[in-house]
Length: 303
Image 1 (cartoon, rainbow, N blue to C red):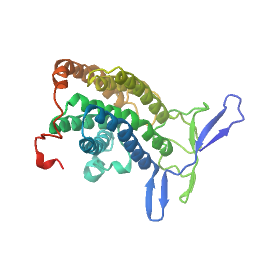
Image 2: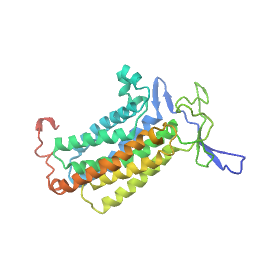
Image 3: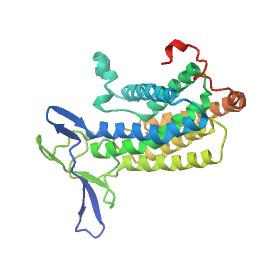
Image 4: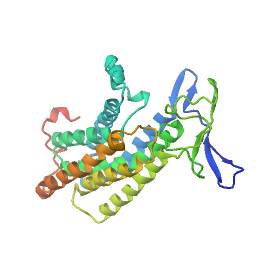
């Protein structure tokens, strides 16, 4: 990665990313995108979920199981949500493995949130844990892991804004055995050597801001579940704003992109519904004893 200076007085320089997103180690093909996802999962669990679980008395083994299941279904949900937005959905249906091929890239984070919340609720019921507490753990995992994963998007060049001459704009000019300036990973209509606004970086910064708000709530000792509701509302607002910068996704009805319509639904319907449910159940559920490690519903299944 390097900064290229311009002779134009209006342009200080752009960040040129000349890293091949595909790392070839002998017969192994490794994607930087996948590496950063793996790092994101580890860091989010180790420094987010695990400390909260220990603090709330949830056994480490159960926290690990919930995290693994949520990652699996979160990835599948992100891929499926991406699939349904594609104009060539029929090609995915005709080859069903492509519907769940998250390893090929192409995922939408709202799908991960939806599938993740459902998985967390099921796991909370399975292990007799306050579901609001589990949802809080899920959003902490998200705000820690997502900014790290966005670094992979920056290397990939798959979340881009409009063309820009700003000093922080990103251009792609990496050389690979497939030929100098190979940029096949970029979205259709985007080109090597052209500077674009780094929408992935904006996404990362937006998530960090949300994370700071959640940390503030956590330190204030708010009741379990409030962080999850605040996250849903703030993430929806962030997507309404940030998708105005993303030009790698085509606009839909009324000029809004698919994620923006989902954000409106989350902000107008989902977040208020969660708040009403939280007000009615949080106090009662907070009194639940975490019994998964002493009297699980199916002792033979908890190893």
